[in-house]
Image (cartoon, rainbow, N blue to C red):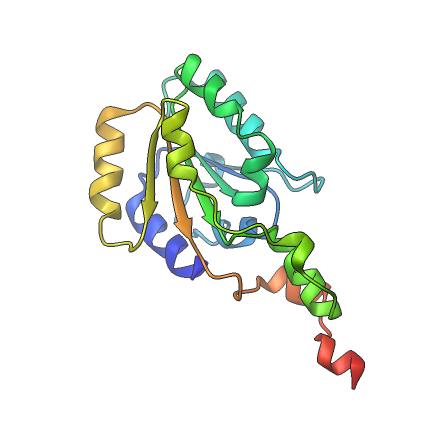
Length: 191
């Protein structure tokens, strides 16, 4: 459940880290971290381009090399520019990429479901982002449960560098933003 992931991250992540929130369905969940200082939380909400999070996080990391940057991103968004993991490694950017991996383009999936349309064009399956990160020379971890999170945050804080943390989440949990934008379930429309 993406809500449980965000609750665990809210508890575990240091409050002085720079938080970058990309667009897309996952962005609503990551924005639910009330204890974060507002000046440490950067978001892209003015346009809906998919894949814009990683370049934004890289810019923040380059501008603030003495800080740790956390990018909160979706799996579809990260796949748009996954090759930038090599740039992150080469430039030794201090970025932790947290991926909500629901195996789909979440915004599109929920819109299609609400309209009763085929969702196969929005579903691609679970990618191994931890393995991909390691292939680019970064740290990578796939989370099966959240119990290890505090220890892994402490390890990352001590060592720095760059990592991709892959959280597999349900594609059944819909953000309130999507529910408001698409309020009529398909079965009501056909009824």
